[in-house]
Image 1 (cartoon, rainbow, N blue to C red):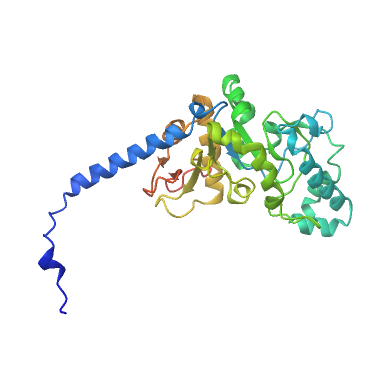
Image 2 (cartoon, rainbow, N blue to C red):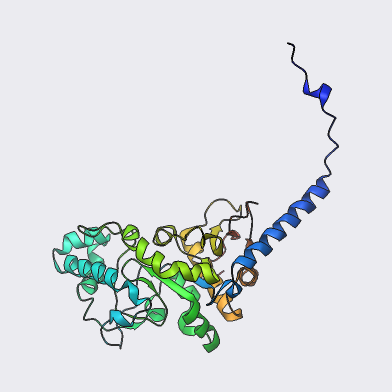
Amino acid sequence: MARTRCASRCPTPPPVDHGEARQESRTNRAVRHDQQSARVGPANGSGVVLILLPPSEGKARGGDGPPVDLGTLSWPELIATRQRVGRTLVTMCQGNAVRARARLGLSEALDDDRAANAELWDSPTMLAGHRYCGVLHDALGYPTLAKPARQRADRCVVVFSGLWGATRPTDRLPAYRIGIGTQLPRQPTLPALWRKPLYDALDGLVAGAGAIDLRSSGYSQMYRPSAGAAPSLIEVKITGPDGRRAAASYQSKVAKGRLARAMLRAGEPSIDALLAAATEIGVLADADADGKGDGKVVVRLPAGWGLVGT
């Protein structure tokens, strides 16, 4: 039997009105933004929207507080894993210094960081909001926040750590150094070790009120939301001007710190607060840049943004 050509059976489609299509696209994106906003906020449950951050690689030295008391840190249900990681880290760093530095990825010039790990349980402590002092945390500037913003940070900010799991700015921590990629002797990888404890500790909070995720990729593997919590977790992707390629690491860290600071100064975190913060710091943010409605916010940095003097 001869094929029947589609053209002989189907009417010719009407011409596309591109202006109408663009308007529909804008409308759909606005609807998806409203849906995202509805999923992230205290209206979905008790509590506050969290801001999830990575730690800083380097830490401020010293402190005036007593040695760390694991029972007083936020999420005391994480104490067993904190002890497991801490004891392994201390034992490793009290042993062969060369092998310990190799596992930690440290040069001999940074041996003080290994030595700090060896004295972890006996070292003085300070507030985590002061201890973390790398590029991102300097841009956040927790110590210089006005009291209302600092109080919001104490409620909202969660800093992930390969040693402590998750901490709040008010937790008192000693100096330490361990990257998320560190492989401790006879232990699983740190993300694998922490995944279940952090899921149990955090998933209900994320599902209930939502979270804005500013973590780097390694730390995002420590906690993955359940299917019920995933729609309430808003992942923020920092890119260059084209909106596709990732921004340079330094600029990305500056952007994340400044976004968090601007949100905390303005009020409670939310998607709308995040978009307003982007405008305030001079970058472009799109709550649905790829049109998928997948809970991602793409933040585009202008060329040269965030570098020294800008």
